[in-house]
Amino acid sequence: AGVEANAAIKRMIEQHGRDVYSMVELRATRAIADQVEMLNAPELKRVLQRFPHAQAAANAWIRLAQLESDAGQLHSASGILTKIAHSAVAPQERATATFLKAEFLEAAGYWRPSYRAWRSLADTAEKEMKITVRGESVSVRDVAIDRLTRPEFRSCEPAARTKPSFLE
Image (cartoon, rainbow, N blue to C red; front, side, top):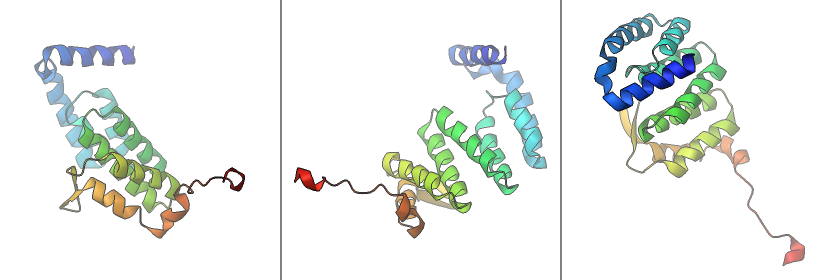
C-alpha cells in the first residue's frame, strides 16, 4: 500500500500543486530539521521514508548519506546517493549526488566505481553546471575531468582498441 499511496500523493501534488501538501509539508520540514540537527541517521532515514514528497527531503537525503559516510557506512551512503541520482528530475540534483558518490568512493579507495562516477560527470555535465565544494563554486565537469587524471584511475581506463594483426 505504501507504494500506491506515494504514487497517489505524487500525482495529487503534480495535478493540484504543492499547496495541497502544505500541512504535511510543515510537519515534514520540522521533523526532518529536528533529525538533521540531532545527527541521528536511523531516525532521519525513518522520517525521510515517512515524508518522501517534502521539499526538504532532497537535501536531507544528501545529509543522511554524509552521516552514513562519516559513520563508516560507505555502502549505505553510496546506495543513498545512487538512489538520489537515479530518481532526481533536476540535472543539478543528479550531478550533486553523483559528485558526492564519486568523492565517497574515491576516499574509500574504491577506484573503479569512483572512476565510473567521475567519467559519467565528465561526459554528461554541462560546462556551466556548478557545485559548491568547501565553500567554493566550481564546475562539476572541470572537477571530474581533473579527478580522472589521478594515477589511481589509470588502471580503470578502458584499453585502447586495436585491430588484430591478421586484419591489417
